Image (tube, rainbow, N blue to C red; front, side):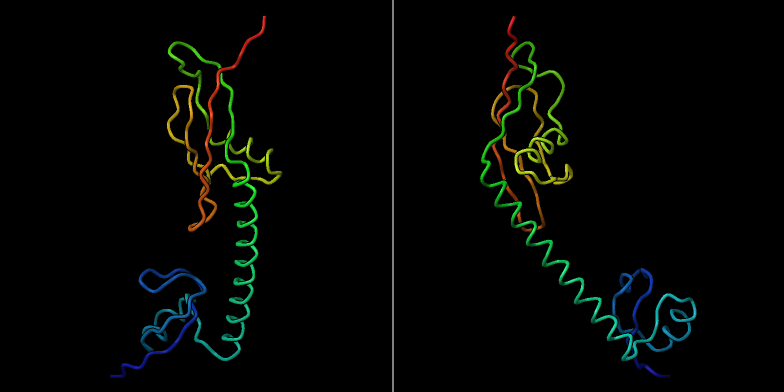
Amino acid sequence: MSKATIRILLKENVSQLGKAGSLVRVKAGHARNYLIPKKLAVAVTPSIMKQVERFLEIERQKQIEIEKSVKTTEMLLQTIKKITVKKKIGKDNAIFGTITDREVSQILSDLINQKIDKKLIEIPDIKTTGCYEVMIKLSSSICVNLDMHILPVTVVN
């Protein structure tokens, strides 16, 4: 009984092995009898290895471009420092409706002329006028905090 392992490239996500596109080592029998016949993986050859390296290089370049974009967005957001939102108010300075991440996204996008995805914005539960902190999570390591002032709408008769 052989305990040899071989390197394979996963074509699909396989539980307990990895995601599609991953290079993993598995026992030769498992690869030969299950993964390769089911077309879940292919054995790594020099040509496949070159393809994987090219793919990884392209992915690295894309990641570098994304990081540059995130850095410029962070710099633009840090110049803003605070945003102001005007809302109708009722009794005890309670606002009508809520402040949504979509509203904040639109305000920020207008200010910096770049689209800010609403999924990146975290807003506290806002029920009254006042000053609140909004967090924009641009990436796993870059986070920008902005002050948001909620002011009442003044009605002129």
